[in-house]
Image 1 (tube, helix red, strand yellow):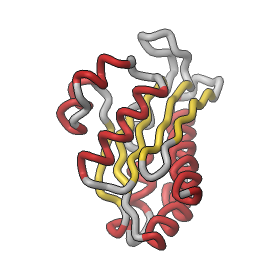
Image 2 (cartoon, one colour):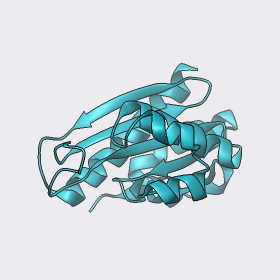
Image 3 (cartoon, one colour):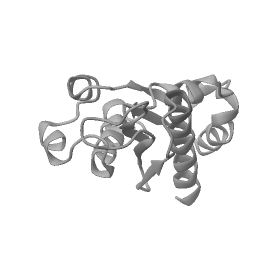
Image 4 (tube, one colour):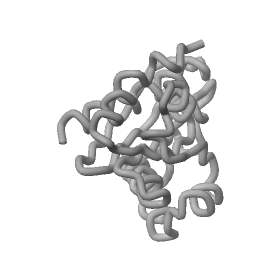
Length: 161
């Protein structure tokens, strides 16, 4: 199991240094991104909220993802991840939003994506989207890989701005 505190220490310190905040809407990472951000002492200075939005209904109800955004692109796509990131950011008034959507495994998802596939977006002063393909079916390892990739993307965006 990952050392959650270590996963987010550097990006947490960077957010605190800049006086910025983040919110998270994650799906196949299952809350690990949020857990990592919250494991760092002083997280209340930068973590505004978030959670695992695993279904379409939870994305609409908890993150206020619009029907139009839901209709634009199916889950497990870069466009969908960007909608999640923007919704998380806007829902709680954070500077940054992380959106993650994919297939953790051990099987693929109903859209035909293989296990280990995730699309991750960061929305804020800089917007970036990446696709992660671990190429294995271990659910727990994939979830951790998705969270690590989300935190790394956030750190790169915060550093770039």
